[in-house]
Length: 133
Image 1 (spheres, rainbow, N blue to C red):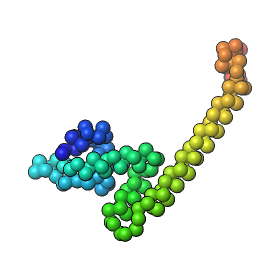
Image 2: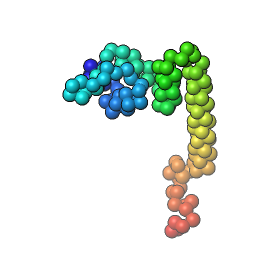
Image 3: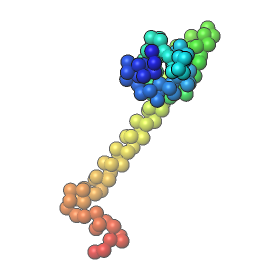
Image 4: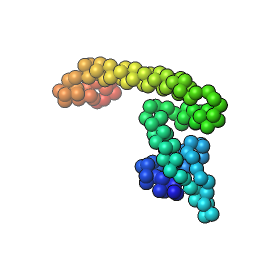
C-alpha cells in the first residue's frame, strides 16, 4: 500500500508517517518504480505500536531507541528496557501534574485576592498604580 493508503487506514497524517519511516519505525517494502513509499500490512502493526507508545507519553527518541533494540534482536528481552522508559515517562508526567497543581494554587490565590474585581465590583484599573483615577 502507498503512504496515502496507510494514512487512511490508520488515521495518521502522511507527514507523520514519513517521519516515522525516516526514523526506521515502520516496516517498509521500499519504493515503487515511481519512487512512492510502499508498505505491507505489517506497517499497520508498527503504526499501532507507535500510537500506543506515544499515548503512554514516550518521546519519539525513546521509541526509536526501543525500536533499535527490538530490531537488533540482541537476545535481550525488550520488556525490562520498556519498563525503564515507562518509569522515565512516569516521572515526566508526575512533574507536569505537580506543575499543574501549582498553577491551580496560583489561580485559587489570585481569585481569592481579586474576587471583587473578578466579579465586576471594582475595575482592575483601580489596582493599577499608573491608571488615571
